[in-house]
Length: 176
Image 1 (tube, rainbow, N blue to C red):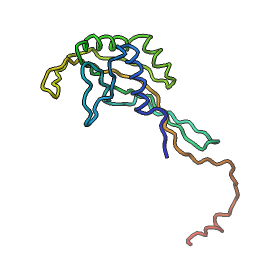
Image 2 (cartoon, rainbow, N blue to C red):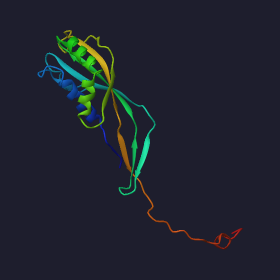
Image 3 (cartoon, rainbow, N blue to C red):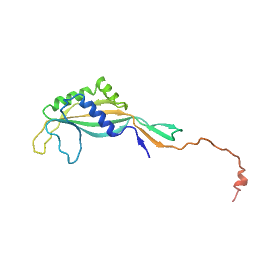
Image 4 (cartoon, rainbow, N blue to C red):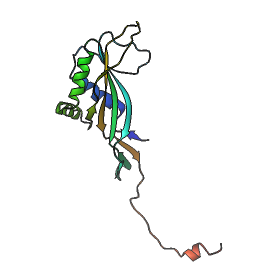
C-alpha cells in the first residue's frame, strides 16, 4: 500500500498555526466546508482547500534495504481564507501581507515538513448572509503553499542473479 509523507491535514495544521500566530487569540480559526456545523458567532477565520497542482516532474529514489520506491513531487496547494466579523478587513490585510515575509517562511519551516508560503492574493470583500438573513462582513483571499510530498510504494529488488548458458536450438528446437 502506498503512503504519503505530507497529507492535507498537515497542510491545514501548518496554515492554522501560522494564522493563529497573527490574530487575536480569541478569534476562532476553523476549517471551512463543513456540513451540519454552525459557524461561530461573531468573527472567525475559515480555511477551505481550492486546488493542488504539481510544480515539477516526479523524482524517484530507491531503497533496496527497505524494498521501497520513493516518489517526490513539488506541489502547490492553494486555500481560500475567509475572514468574518467587524475586523475582517484588518485580519485579511494582516494575513495576506504577512505571507510575503521572512516571518511566514520561518514559521512554516518550524513545522519541520518543508512547507513554505508562495504567495497570497489581495483581499476582496464578498457578501455573506447568515442563517438569520443578516449581512456579515467577509473578506477573502487565496493563499498558496509549496510542499514536497513523498509517496512511498513497495518495490522488489534482486540481490543476486544466477546466469547460465543454454543451447537455444536444443532447448527450443526450430519448428517445434
